[in-house]
Length: 143
Image 1 (cartoon, one colour):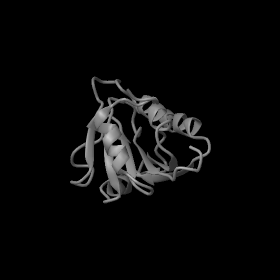
Image 2 (cartoon, rainbow, N blue to C red):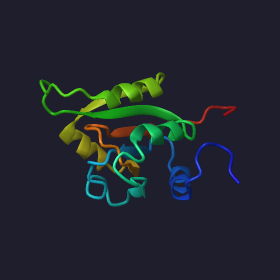
Image 3 (tube, rainbow, N blue to C red):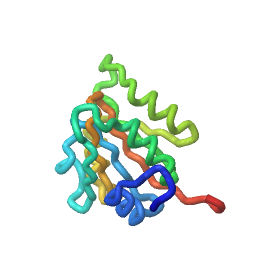
């Protein structure tokens, strides 16, 4: 039996294989989960139904499982797009000590196809621009 918040065998195995600098994409339900990443990226499907699970729920468990060095969020291509992205405020609140970067939509797709992205977690999150790209940090002494 495991201690800790995560019990998903496939995700635990994938995380154990990821190291410092590896990237994990927690993708919303609109993201192209198979064509929007590199061919070696491991797909973990947690998209049970629309809205289940959402990125916030996955992030809540993930942040208590691995060190997170950096977070990057997808933003609209057009800076004048009036869309309000509540998801981004949620992520910043959940990761107050983590550096955040913003990547425009089409560049985000390119970043997600990078060889550094080893895991994509498909969620049922229905919010627009709710994709979150995380960089695995370093485990600190005593953790």
